[in-house]
Length: 295
Ligand code: GUN
Image (cartoon, rainbow, N blue to C red; front, side):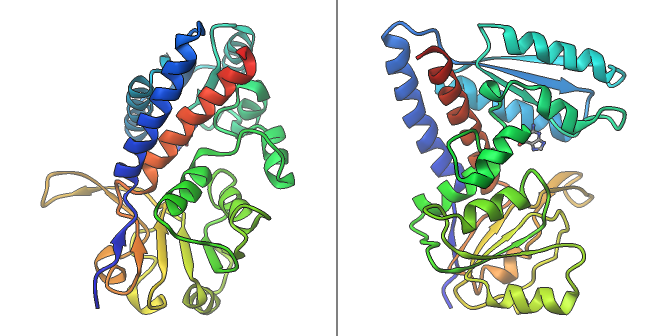
């Protein structure tokens, strides 16, 4: 059987960034200051440093200005919230992103809900989550948006299909399932499997999937024997592992790519699948925030 077609997030994200660049240039040309994204990074988590680097690079390529506010691991929650309040009222700032994870003494929920909903480009504020659940206009989380855009631009139709989402995290699994089943969005019959789904049940559900989305963070979770012929596979898992043969860190998805790509019709690579799409949607949300705030 022919190997699966790649869901090429890297290539598609470049196309989207080019499109955004020309829209932002046109907006700038009629006298608006370029959109500005403030990124808050607490501590020195190497994965976070790498993600933030990707976000800043994409912002620059789309013509968005940005700043990184780096804070020590020891910062108190109240100091972090005060900083966010000042960004909320700063007219030069259109979008605010606090990179996760945060140290355990800081409540991520409190942080999400302190960012002004008008500047909530990550879509993590409880008000944004409410809009998502209601199918109302608002900032939706970047990874679920990126997945839907990746499928759309690759010609994958989700309407009436069986979609299975593995993982129920508040920032990825849950909102992805929300978009995938929603009226006028994914319109798929959507099942969520999670840590309490018995193994046998999970195999049954995964085996029925036309579209399989995994956001667990467990390399090797999905193997070829579990999936249908022709399945569309979107791998959102990213586990950073030290590869002693390469003497370097490598990124591993949840899916056994070698095996599953023999059966799938479409599959994302890791890296180069969903990751770059997430970054694109962040840039898109930042431009939307700027237009709403400053016409
Ligand atoms: N950490 C890992 N992914 C993300 C993301 O998309 N946004 C934020 N804020 N933190 C993250």
